[in-house]
Image 1 (cartoon, rainbow, N blue to C red):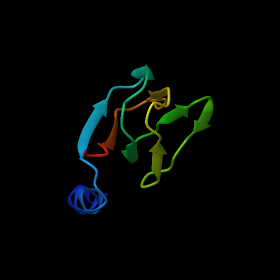
Image 2 (image 1 turned 60 degrees about the horizontal axis):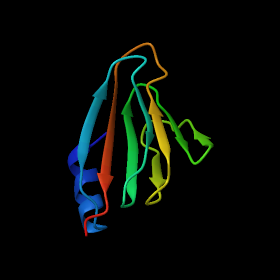
Image 3 (image 1 turned 45 degrees about the vertical axis):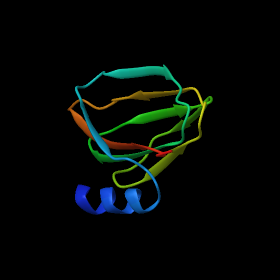
Amino acid sequence: MDAKKIRQQWESRGFSFGIFRDPPGRVWQDFSHSTEELVILAEGQIEIEVEGQMHRPVIGEEIFIPAQAIHTVRNVGKVPNVWYYGYRVA
């Protein structure tokens, strides 16, 4: 995954860019944001539940999370994962 390229693409679309590195079993549960969010898995495995709909993206697959949507992100793998996230910039 080319983080620099993804950052540039997201910024051109009006999104910020950040990186999370999570250990196996890490759960970010029942979050919502006032703005839209993008997520891309870069390494490992991840499960993203958005308003009850489950996603298990492959590396490089982009997931869109609408503003105000309740969502949970889980590292369901046995190794650490890396995922990119970005929020719509006002």
